[in-house]
Amino acid sequence: MRRSAYIAAAIFALVALVPLAGEMYWLRLGTIMLMYSILAMSWNFIGGMAGYPSFASAAFFGLGAYAGAVSQKLAMPMVLAWGIAGLASLLFAALLGLALLRLRGHYFAIASLVVAEVLRELVNSATDLTGGGMGLNLPVPRMASVQAQAVFFYYAMLILAAVTLAAMILTTHSKLGFGLRCIKQNESAADMLGVNTTFYKVSGFMLSGVFVGFAGAIYASWVHYIEPPDVFDVLYSIKPVVMVLLGGLGSVFGPLLGAGLYLSLEELVWRRFLEVHTGVLGLLIVLLVVFLPRGLIALRRAPGAAQEKPLSRVKA
Amino acid sequence: MSELLELNGVSRRFGGLRALHNITLSIPQGEIVGVIGPNGAGKTTLVNVVTGVHPASAGSIRFAGRDITRVRPWQAARLGIARTFQVVQPFPEMTVMENVAAAAMFAGSAGYGEEANERALEDLEFVGLGKSVDKPADSLTLAMRKRLELAKSLAMRPKLLLLDEVNAGLNATEVEHALDLIRAISARGVTVLIIEHLMKVVLTLCTRIVVLHHGELIAAGDPAQIINDPRVVQAYLGRRYAKAEPA
Image 1 (spheres, rainbow over the protein chains, first blue to last red):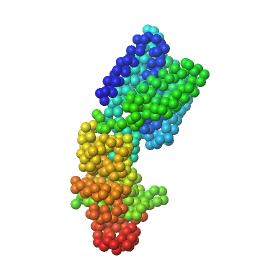
Image 2 (cartoon, one colour):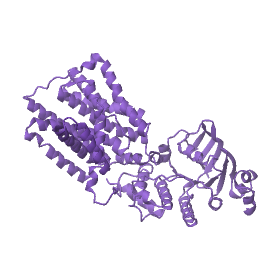
Image 3 (spheres, each protein chain N blue to C red):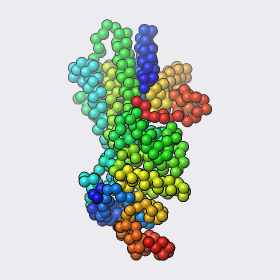
Image 4 (cartoon, chains in turn yellow, cyan):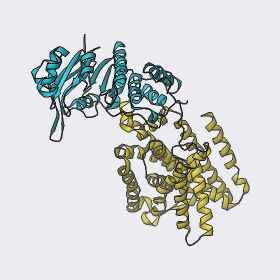
C-alpha cells in the first residue's frame, strides 16, 4: 500500500508541472486527460473490482454537470455547486444501485446503459430549470485571463483525480475492496461466507458515481455551456471501459495508464488520419486487446508469466 | 441437551413442485446428524432453506433460540451457520489463504489483514493444507478443494456446519481422511448436519439419521432404528441392503 502511495505521489507531482509549459493546447489536453482518468478510475470500482459491467458513467457525468450548472444558475458559488453535484451523484448512485445491482452480467450492463438516456429526456423536458434542448449557459468565472482560467480548471481536475486515486488505493487495501473481489469471483459463495453483497455492491457503485459527478460539474464550469447530447453522451460510458481494459482491469494504476494511452492514441490518430480516424483508432484498440488481454499493467510482470500471480496474503 | 436448530412445519415450493413439505425436525447441540434420501428428495433444499438461500414458503425455523426463517445467507453465516457445497465453490483466482481469510473476516469477525491471515493459517493447518497456502485455489485437486471448503467453514467459527456431500468424488483413503476431520470438528463442539449417500459413512459417523423422500420427512432416529424401518428400506435402501447389513 505504501508503495502504491509513493508511485501515485510521484505521478501527480510530475503532472502538476504541466501548466509551467504554459501552452493552452497542453493545458486543454491535460485537463481532458485528467477528466477521463477520473472516469476510468471510477469505473474500476464497480467494473474492475466487483465485476459489474456498468455503463452508467454518462448518467453520473451528465447528472453532475446539470446539478452543478443549475446550482450555479441559482447563484450558488462555483465550488459549492460542485459539492452539490458530487452529493447528488452519490445519492443517485445509491438509489440506482439498490435497484440495478439485483441484475447480473448483460442484464445489468443494458439497464445501466439506459439510465443516461432517461436522464437526458428528463433534462430535455424540464425546460424551465435546465433550458431543455437549448442548453444552459454558465457564468464565466471572473479571473485575470483566459490562461488563468485554464490553469485553474486544470488544477481542479488534478486535485479531483488525486482524490479518486487515493480512494482507489485505500479501497484496494481494505475490507471493502477484498469483499468486492470476492463478489467478482463468486457472488453466491461470498454471500455464504457472510459478505453483505448488497451493501458492498452499492458502496462500490456509489464510489463509481461520486467522483464522476464532481468531474461533470467541473467540466460544465470549465466549458461555460452544456446541453443534454453533450454531457449525456454515451461515449462517456464507453470510453472509460475501454481505457480500463487497455490499462488493466481491477489494478490500481491500470485505469490511469489506460486513460493516458487511449487519449494519446486518439490525439495522434486524429491528427494524422483526419478522414478515417475512428476506424484506425478502433483497429488499434482491437489489436491491443487481442495481444494484451490483461492490459498494459501486465507488461510489468516477468515475461513468460502468462497468468497474474495473485497476492498470497491479504495485505493491509 | 438443548436444541440448536428447530424446523417447525417447514415447506418450500418451486412453482408447482413441492421440494419440502411440512418438515418438523429438531437438532440437538453437539450431534452429528445424517440426512439421507433418494436423489431429488429435498436434501439440498433443506440446507438452502436453513441458510436463507431459498427461504421457506411456510413454517418457521429457529436457530440458537432466535427465529431465522427470513434471514439472508450472509446473516445466517454471521449467526454461525456454515455450509459446504455439493459442487465446491472457491474464489478461483485467490490463493488458498485468501479464500479462508475471507471466511474469517466476513463471518468469523476477524480483523482485516494479519488477524484474518493468522486465523486462516490455523484452520488450513487443521485440515492439512498448511503447505498449500500460497497456491491459487483453482490449482488444487478435488480432494484438496473439499478440504479447503472445510477450512473456510471452520474459519467462520460456526455453531452449525452443514455438509452437502463432502465425500462425493473422493476415493476410499480420502473419505477416511475426511471422516477423521469431521469427527475432529465435531469434537470442537460444532453441531454437524451431513448429507451423504455412502451408507457406511452415515452409519459410522452419525448419532442420528433423518430420512427424506419426495420432500417429506419419513423417518428420524438413531441408526439402528432407521435401517430397520420398512418405509426407509422401501424408499431408499432397498431390501437387499437391509438383509446384508442387519443392525
